[in-house]
Length: 411
Image (cartoon, rainbow, N blue to C red; front, side, top):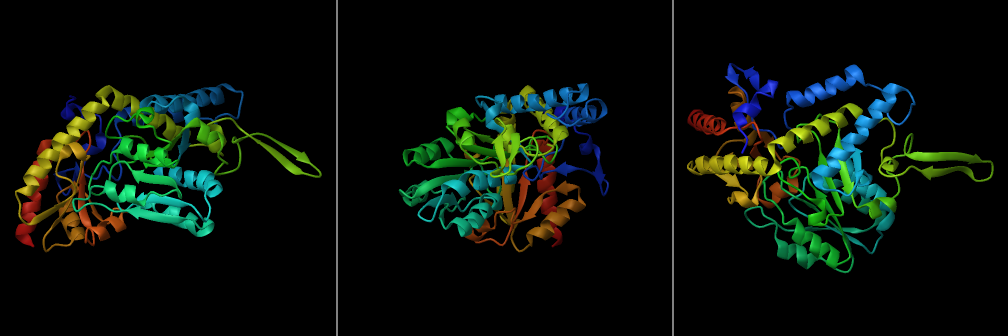
């Protein structure tokens, strides 16, 4: 196990104070903080190597291109993809899922087909499919959850038919923290000749993930939730799928050639993978930051990252469950959830709780967390969410729970 107190020294933002209180950052499911190593890597790129990639023969362009391509290699190794041809850089998880929708589903699905998802999804894994269903006429079906927020696998299996062409699920809920059995879902999808899409926004930063072992067709995740800058995300896809998909966005660098013919117009030949799906000038600086973030996490060890979060989650649940005024949502077994604890204080508005905590320098999320159908299914108008990462400590959890008690006393 790594030492979180040593890790904290790499995160300068944690030295800030709010209203005289040391920051406690428990909003990691929304975005993570950035270590000096990542900040310096991005700064170093702009100081020494800044140039457009794949565009010039000059030294800076060649060096920038090499760094950018190396970032793809780092991601491929991190999730055990076969090669960088299976790694497409996007802005975030949302864009990666939309790429699947408009490059694969738009061309593959019709009125007789069905897309199967769940009620525990982030809006990013609901809205694209609902939009596209209005265009193509296919049906979107939703598997139910259990009372503790875990996925109801029987409901999922019962909804699969011969019309099911795509199953799209989150790996871990951003509200309850419930971790889904992706191997089981992949087997169900492939036995029924369906393609599997996995939203890995809440899993890739927090646990070991092997796309080949899980047999994933598509995986989407964001860099900013795993120590990297904003504006960089990843779509992993099996090579054979990408080879048979149309580009999502057209423009520069995603073509090999454009030849004009007076009769036929412009005849376009796409670039090789993964550049076929990376149109225009990419976010090179953030890609380099993502590569450095992966190196940082690899030094800690993803098994250790997951174990640390489990210890924090177990401790938080233990302390919170001692308060009868607090209702906790999601599985209580930390082996089946990631480092997320959502709750409400009876008789108090979730936004008020978050604002009170902020007065003491404790930063959490409140509201629907971009998962309104899940809250609706749980009979909630919203919740407070605390989410943990590598730099959080048990002492912070103790101060968090003590502050909640103070809030209850003054309401």
